[in-house]
Length: 102
Image (cartoon, rainbow, N blue to C red; front, top):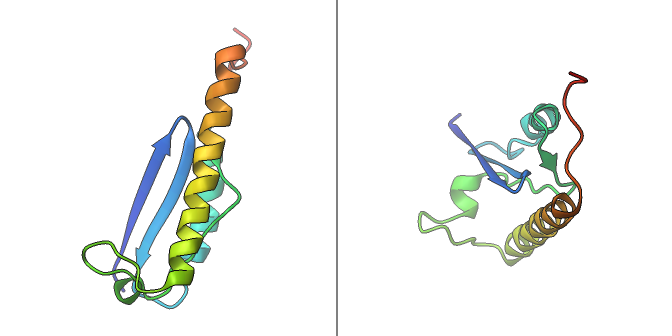
């Protein structure tokens, strides 16, 4: 099985993308990685999309072959953009707390 991991970070919002040829679309690995990026101080949006058989669902040009998948990916990006704007707006008003008391 061949897979590739991509993390896209925008204003501390994170998209976790697994490109997997298997039938589960990297869903189990993505759950574990969400915990890890949270420990790094990044925001993992609650929306997630598993793409089973990614090599068939997405063309080499990056076009989805399924309208439902396209809608799910659009919804995921809307969640990420919303979270990024919310974090940026809040961080402009108030600085984050220190990581340590010293």
